[in-house]
Image (cartoon, rainbow, N blue to C red; front, side, top):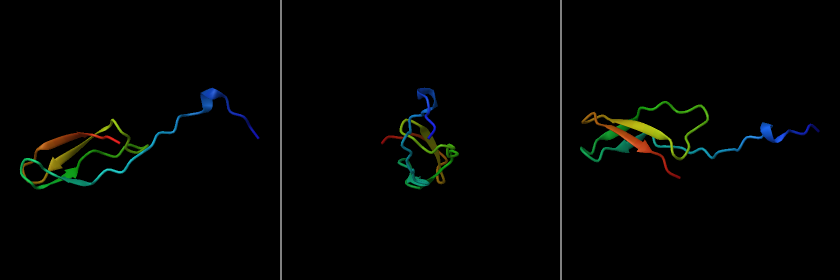
Length: 65
C-alpha cells in the first residue's frame, strides 16, 4: 500500500444539481440556464445565470446549499 502525504490529499467538495429552467419574476415566462456547467460540478457560492425567454432579462443567481 502506498501512503500519500498531506499535500496529496484534496478536500472533497459537495456538488449540486441546479434547474435548467426557472420562472422570471418580472414577466412570468421561463428562464433558461445560460451558464456553462463547471467541470467539477456546481457548488454553493457559485453564480449561475439565466436568460428569460419572454423579456430577455438576465438573472444572476448565487447558489446556496
